[in-house]
Length: 400
Image 1 (cartoon, rainbow, N blue to C red):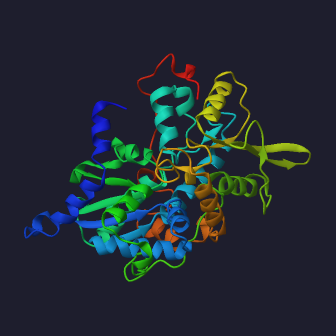
Image 2: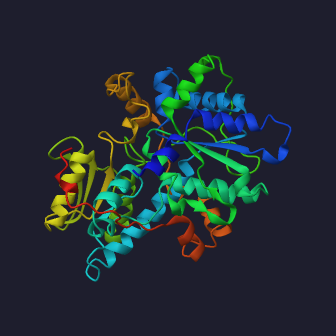
Image 3: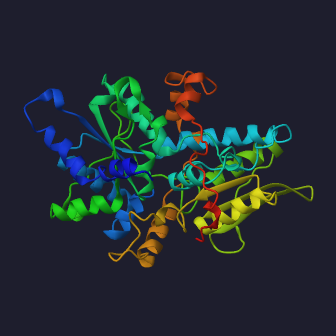
């Protein structure tokens, strides 16, 4: 991280959040902002487990608390993950079909984790970054939804919205600084501030507020007059489930196989697991989940030696996945809170699964907002590019 980036990350804190809230209380309405907060699905189990609530109660009470502070809209980022997963599914099938023509078509690496993306771009070479899926992460797409789609629906200029994301990890703050995550025309970032789940709890403590005393308020949707229903999630026990969704989609599209249940096989450790599809006695799909930098480094070394035989890898920087983000799953002395994490995993796996394909709002938005799934607008809005910068020859000597 550069010094400038460090300073800008540090600015994404409770003080900045309250600065905007307090500006809205001043008489000069020209400086007022519409405050929108987007909640990551992996943050909600933290609040549910920490305060002994159901995940639906946690979502509504968190919404009630934020609105009591002066927030205007509270959204769920699941819809953004729907777009990201659908685009990743399509891209994988396309890469698989041209694997014999393009050297870097496979393996495809997931692009949702900003810690992994930062490591790939700043430390690794283009040999690796060319394998990263070009679909934007859920946070990036939520930025486009709030400051693009929602702003247009509300007849607002994007710079009049102050968009906050509540996330399980600090790396999301870095992701918010990406240059391709910025609308130059309006001099406006698509996400203005990222607060971790733990930082929201700190605000509650500063305000001396008990979640159990907060009024439940239904989470808003991006569509006029509608509220979100019960909390839903994607397949995958600790993340947004890119591996499971892409695996099932590819099995059906490429080989005509309906996969109902996925069986994970743990290899060197519980954070490196593989999933395979067999057809006519042959392994036709080989996917892996690689969590934590030790597994990521081993994966990259094998790739560079030409000994990496997976078609797709769900890569996450945090051991244990997104629920174990350092912005929520730690004790006060900075150690992993294993008991809380176990509760969070139990809460998360109990949330009903909704397939991205079944979200009718997403299907409508492809047509009404993005001008079709294959349009230039859809490509520009939902995809980006990743490339190596500031390469270091000693980067792979780091022992994680």
